[in-house]
Length: 347
Image (cartoon, rainbow, N blue to C red; front, side):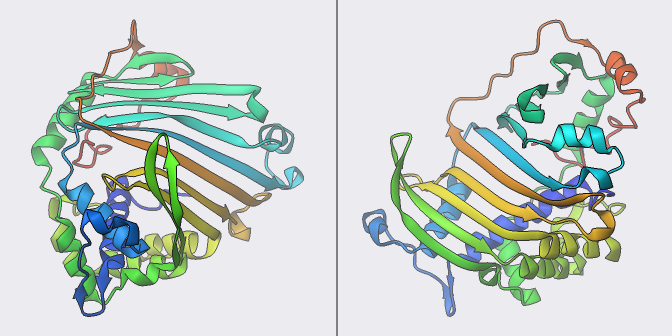
């Protein structure tokens, strides 16, 4: 399946969805809802808790964010209908697990990401990763680190010079209101499971059943609007246009192929920062693209920490030249570091 939309568009959709959902959940029919004081936190509704999360995120002074994650995919497939049936059966006979850690910082610019992929019940594993320190970068493939070429540094410099300020949350909220999009309709159910303890901290446990068909339809309306392009400006280069085919594919994926989605959030009651989230859904590919795959049961878990200390990225010891990775992959890099892959943003 071809890429749905360029990376920058995906990031914008994610930002728009989270910001609008939180803002929309906190709005009343007559305008903005009153924000409770901390002393009244025990009586907060799920909508008010999400409002506080949004405000905490906007006001937070965080040096860097650290997270651990795990993605488990369980396949229901018919190997006889797959192009490489015997090999596919070996890989898909047990859940595929992707796990690791991620730490990112904007000032100074840095990232340290690890990824472990386990196939065939763990009998086959791959270690991958990415590190970035200012304009230097390294990528890990099959446990070996490689130094990214000078073009990477040039692309980072160009992207930071050209990056326009990102729109404020309130601007997204006003845009949705103008387009007649109501984010409150994106959740079929939103409930407070209760107050719990997580790693010694008191947290609110929220459960959300999203209406993916409605969400996909509304995002399509937003992405096609001239007001959206005016709002994001340089965040979405003119050459990265969104055509009807992109929107049709997105609506099919979100609104039709993803079944029984469920999102759960654990939110610290003292800081209103998200400490943990889980997501579950059953992906049922269209029959014409299934190639023997009936469904993919997907489970995702992430724990998050906001840290006050700056991120210190340690360059890997003795990285190999990037040209060796190119030879190993049998490719020439495909213009990865000509600036097109960074899309005007460094996160």
